[in-house]
Length: 258
Image (cartoon, rainbow, N blue to C red; front, side, top):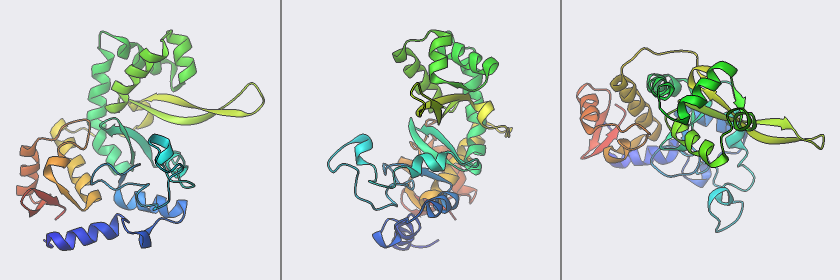
């Protein structure tokens, strides 16, 4: 196992955290995602960040939210999510995480369990997932009209379901009344967005997510790893992964890939 100092230097290099390693093109960004396996948009944890790797001034200096995104490279987030081998999931505790197939495979058992639970829920979650099951992927406007859900109610239902990947949203273009187009969201059930079931227990899926996350980050503290995803990862499980040689201790409390 490399020293903490060496791992920190490797993390700076591989996560492109220095300006000399800034992403220059969309294809470089796609290769970065494929290499790391998962990317947050803004930098909010040890996980690799798309926008941090851009090293570009914000769209609006001093702004929060969208205004803090890179001035010209912010569309990369949407363009990467449109690729057939990428899903933009909100399993990073409600925040977008760009995921490659390996990460989607790890999410699959957890998302299917959340979907099954939603189908039996005594509230609007069941109405939404059952509607998507019968109608197929549906735009937000059609969901509002067909289910008669007020926007605040639909927003709350979406947040719950998307944070557990039971429902997956993607941005699409639809015609507008002026002959142009506008952007909206299309909702899909997990089993419509990902059709390769992985029959594994929740613990096995969480273990795989933890391993993929640590590999992506190069180095991370176990306290943070436990809180990366919408599903908490117990420290006991992380300890088991270390004992099994699937993760390694880089120092007291620090985890790395062996």
